[in-house]
Image (tube, rainbow, N blue to C red; front, side, top):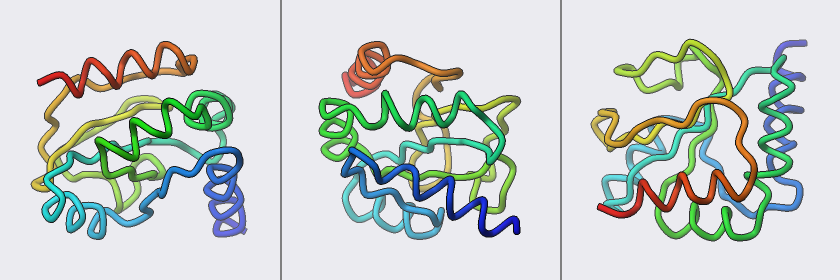
Length: 129
């Protein structure tokens, strides 16, 4: 039953958006090391209505999708799962973390649901280094 809900939640990320979500921290770290792109970790839960709103709005936005695809290795994880970066803890979801291949947080996290416009601005701020 738990697996069904997880698959259903993760499947909702594919509607209207072409973000190629990784579901494995190991594969995201490997891709990050190869591409030199940081990992953008979308931390969610199966019972979070705000996570669903964010996935269906901000993360489905064409401009957000383009920037995420160009600048980050996208990873979606259920909070406190084994796929969470080991050096990061979150107190609530949705949360977006920015980590390197060694799992170090390299930019300020985004916490709470964000509109597409606000999230795009958040991402732009984190890519200007």
